[in-house]
Structure formats: structure tokens, C-alpha cells
Length: 121
Image 1 (cartoon, rainbow, N blue to C red):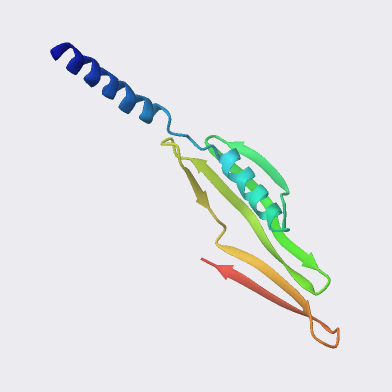
Image 2: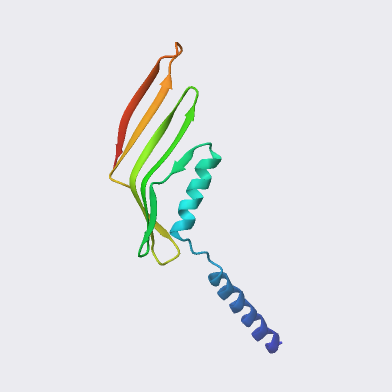
């Protein structure tokens, strides 16, 4: 009986240790691509002016996200977005201090209107 107790303890330890080894680590590129894919699935478009790694940080410059329909649309501009790989499997995202947003739309007579705003944090 004692023999099986040790085998069971070893199997339990192996199971617990394998669970910690199986945790996923995210990269900055994976996070950025998941956002691009997510918004594309919503019918929106994400563009980027440039993309470069700066040490452990993915820097996206002059990015925009938006959508356009015959009735109108919106565009949000992100001058710089930083995705830093923290080292514990997570990614820290830093948005710009201000994000300009433009919303366009048509009223019932077909007149086009625009609203310019800025999201500040």
C-alpha cells in the first residue's frame, strides 16, 4: 500500500508541475495581431504607419482604426502605441495621451456631418 502512495504522490507532483509549464506567454506581436484580427472581424480596419521593436517593446506609430459605411463612419488615430513584454507572460499596453477621433454621418436629408473629438487620458 505504501508503494502506491508514493507513486500517487509523484504523479500528482508531475501533474501540478506540468500545469505551470503549460502557461502561455504572450508576445507584443501576438497581442497586436489579435487586436487587428478582432477588429477586422467586426468589419473595421486597422492600419499602421510603422512597426518596430525597441528592446522589449513593440512600437506602433501612426496607427488608425476605423470603419466606413454609406451612412458614415469613424476613424480613431493613435500617434504611438507601445506594447511592452513584461517578462511574466503578460504585455503592458501604453496608449497615447490623446487620440483624435473623427465621426461622420448623414442625416435623413443626406447632409453629411462631422464631429472631431479627442480622447484624452
